[in-house]
Amino acid sequence: MQSLNSRGRRDWMKQAAACAAALCAPMARAANPPAWPAKPVSLIVPFPAGGPIDALMRALAHALSAPGNASVVVLNQPGASGTLGPTTMARAAADGATLAVITPSVFRLPHVQKVGYDPLKDFSYIAGLTSFAYAVSVSAESRWKSLAEVVAHAKANPGRLNVAVVGTGLGYIATHHWQKKAGISVNPVSFKGGADAMVALLGGHVDLMFEAGWGAMAQAGKVRLLAAADTQRLPGWPDLPTMAELGYDVSVQSVIGIAGPKNMDPALVTAIQDAVLRASGDEKYQRALATESMPSRPMNAREYTDYAVRQFAAERDNARELGLANQ
Image (cartoon, rainbow, N blue to C red; front, top):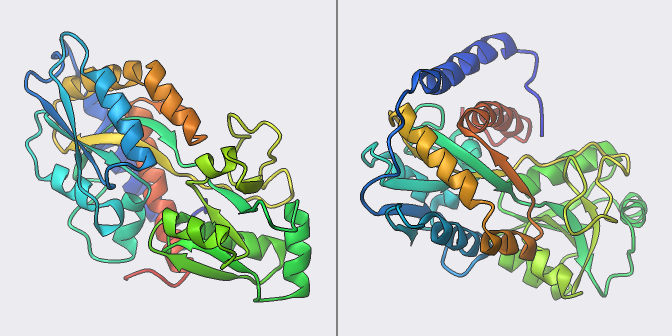
């Protein structure tokens, strides 16, 4: 979402390149890749059961538990803004039997508070799968039909437009960048989770929402979408313009993927990567994506590792710009 400031950029990029090389280089030397782990695999989902990511990962786990593979069991471990599960996974044996879903907060939180992991040292990145679809949305009862109308209102009423976001996460950051680029001043209202933010939006307690998790409500006609904070138009919503198309270069990088503990055999990483990417084509999994209007954006291990390095750097810059950095 945001590039590094010039100060310290050169040293940081050298460090990032070294980390990426350390994570990726062994993959090129792998030979005779082992089969899928012989014992049951635990896939830790860092959210409560019943949510969209839980449903998505249960569909993936079902596809992965194919004949010839050991079963994959989803374990829900919410907490610490989606980082408790990955922290638990990082302490497991590097045998592929414990994996975790990685969300964007894994790269943001180390710059904001003390955490029990290092995203560049403690994980073996296996595969990227999809991303949260962030958008500016209003209630279907709202008088606003376009983002231009919202911006005009915000300019006429500085600081009075209430925008629902989750904590100080990606929606909060995106709102900050949007108001800078639009020349407006809005009031971000932070909620503990997306469900709470949606309730506030539908109840008229906030004016709009800049978050993910709107899919089901938009499909039900309860929410009106005004713009997508993505690099391209979202599947299922071809008429919804991106913020860049409307003149605001704001996009949210929010890849969701799977990782294992550090020091996994590169050949094992490749074997699991291949199985995960094959399973992502499963019909039930694809239906779960469509339900939440989430794009299918597969990444192999090398691509996902490169993303992790870039996103960790970008989140450090965001935390400093917003005054959230812990150092």
